[in-house]
Length: 208
Ligand code: AMP
Image (cartoon, rainbow, N blue to C red; front, side, top):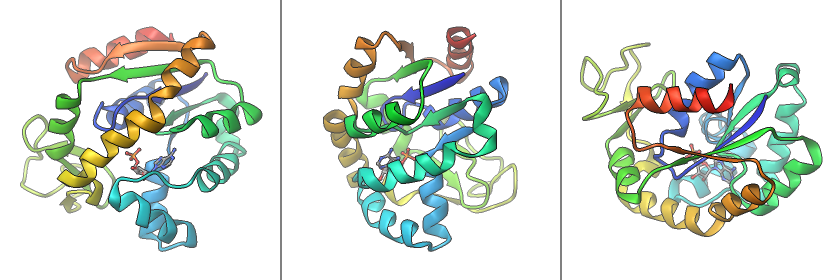
């Protein structure tokens, strides 16, 4: 099964994608995670990407397309994959079409206010990438990851100004993909404003 998960930043894509990929036994491919790792490792791609990411801008299409081309060549993608945060522009979707077929595109839909509230309270583990929320999913010990003991940080792009920029970029660059995939008959809409468990159940129901 080859799946794309679309949705505003803060819609819950990362959280749900991890669960869904595990349930379906396919790799979870998050371009955001790959770029953050590259930036941490200070690779040429990572250093270039960081400048865009910290401001809430999109990383140029050619860099992302090359990254995805390499990633889906790997053995684990033979059984399918779950894309989270890719494609984010029409040129990315067109490039993807040339290299792979897609079975389902899910739009995890939330209101702007919900996305802003989730992003501004979000904390991310520097060690393992686990996600928390200061109100909805607080860690047992303040600023410490329950899972690995790593430090919980506020991502640079989860700061107020970058959040607003990301929502604006989403509307301009990514939203057109909804229509693009609807026309192809691949689009499924799931209400991302419900509880985490309900969303998981609905997502699994939509792909099984
Ligand atoms: P995410 O973790 O998916 O919210 O992505 C974090 C940031 O990484 C985005 O705000 C972009 O700067 C960059 N990024 C991730 N995926 C893409 C993509 N498909 N195209 C362009 N930029 C991306």
